[in-house]
Length: 262
Image (cartoon, rainbow, N blue to C red):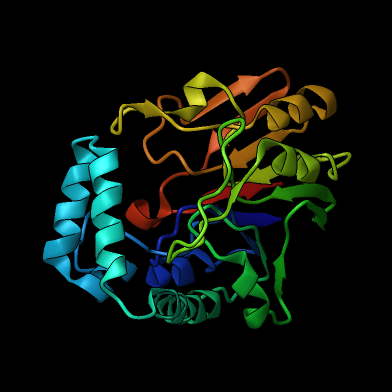
């Protein structure tokens, strides 16, 4: 059995199609959408709507860690549109149509935070399974899937924004983790809450990991825990108990899937 695993695709449909070559199955760990392209300011949804110059201003504010100023600038941009939600949904559907069409191998996908899972049923078809809080069997192994990312304790998702990121409360995410049993391979977008796995050495900050995933690993001791989300991790892999934890890589930039063989 040969399974290719990708995460953080961010619009790279061409590489996604190549990732299906030679694979018995493709596992997608989320962040299909290219919303803000920090490498090509004219790309992504914001680049398409506002142009490279304005996205460049926003990206620079983010790089300077001026997060409040970046948020205020983005709100000002979106407020200038008559119906920003419809514009974003239209652009997301266009990206999803291309991305899901590129998944020519049997595919098992879970959403990331830069995804809109409410729209995924529109692209359902044979050979494409969309899983969240579910287990699927591949080649005799049980793969457990949980999508989205976690919010800090007590923080609620922001309402009324043009893009609805898939951000989940700790309780909601933990409820999906609790649905998984006898898992051999744990597949999530967000990493377990271990500092070596959550710290991004380029952004110079720790992303939020999931304590519920750490609990599952301790209790069920899967062979592997696969995830993405952290683009430049301090440790791309480590062993936690009997489980090998692996960040499968920033696929938009590398174009290389992580390969499982058994």
